[in-house]
Amino acid sequence: MYYTDRGIEELERRRGEEEVSLAWVADQLRTFTDLNPEFETAVDRLATWLARLDDDDDE
Picture (cartoon, rainbow, N blue to C red):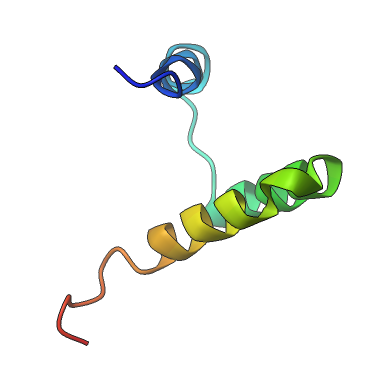
């Protein structure tokens, strides 16, 4: 288990039953980055990865 799994598990446990829009998630990521600019690269990489999940690997 990675250390980051703790946060993921807490998120799932505390908010796993909620339904939210991707617009809401994007807004939360922007807020988090504004408050924690040192994580800008990681948040950007996560957002890009999520945005491209359905892309074909050979593009």
